[in-house]
Length: 211
Ligand SMILES: N[C@@H](CCC(=O)N[C@@H](CS)C(=O)NCC(=O)O)C(=O)O
Image (cartoon, rainbow, N blue to C red; front, top):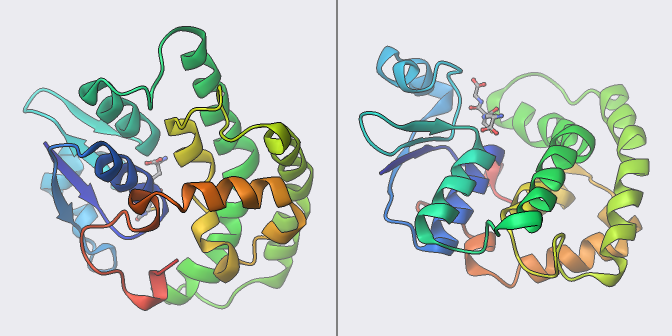
């Protein structure tokens, strides 16, 4: 299997899962700023022209980081993707995370990390303020859920944790107000105990993209 990645947010999920699961993947690094993800051979695999992409075989290519994590967990027979109702709970958090949490923390990551990295213009303070405002009620929901739990689902680590927490390694740089949500911060501290979470990428990360 080949896992195409760059040292950015969504590939970070797939790389963390692959490293955690010790998946038999060959990591293939793409230079986004050189447009390597827009080349015809890559677009034939992932028509979105984005990373990550997991090429399993000639017949099976998976894009979308959450789906790649799910595939790798199934491949490993790991309860990182649990069975039965727990799996539905995982899906709930994957959906919630995308729509209600990373939507806003990701906007902050874009303003404070991706813009300087890519030379995509100055940080827009109004956009950052609006993202922070929209984030707060959702962060409160997550903070409350984690008040009495170690992890999001059934107190076991799952791909939902990797997915929902994906912006948090960048909290300081991206000015995500983690200090206002102590249960989220404690949960993320717990994830940080995992080497695969702290250092998911197989190659050194350029300072400008480092967590
Ligand atoms: N929904 C996709 C998003 C993938 C995505 O947006 N990847 C970014 C890097 S974090 C990318 O490839 N950006 C390059 C571009 O859009 O040109 C996923 O979860 O995998």
